[in-house]
Length: 213
Image (cartoon, rainbow, N blue to C red; front, side):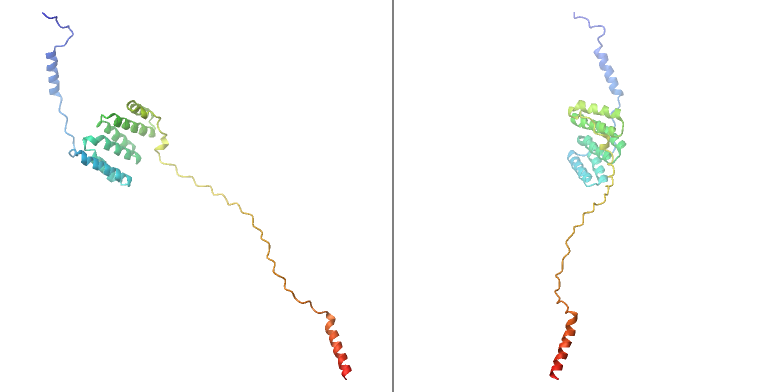
């Protein structure tokens, strides 16, 4: 005869029956609500269209195409990552947090999960929640050591400060350039006759008349 099983060994038949009962009690997951899943090719086109709409500043169209792309299981996390980044850029930080956390439930890919954790860490850092920021930063660095860099300054995601008005300094007066005055050529005039010249001429004529007479 074989050796008796240890007293603490569970009865396999009993364990199997217990697992079957537990499986019967578990409700099947509900089908996802909303529109049906989107094929991967159509989702890639929608994601590309959303990126183009974001580049040209059409944010409503970008959100609409990102949500469309998120209907594909293969792009559910990536589309939500793009949507969360846009929400963060528009200052919708709480919505961005919800979107990025939701994206984590749609992926098991390590690089993508690390990117989502890093986005959440930076987002919490800009919101002033240092504990949450450090937590998600550590999660990101654990999946990808390249993301172990310190968080960027909080001012990086805030609105840029308005430019300071330039100080207008009075222009330094330039010294006047003294130009030599242009000398006009002197007009040569004949000197006036002596005052006694006419009298002498008259006297000469009188003498001539006297001699003729």
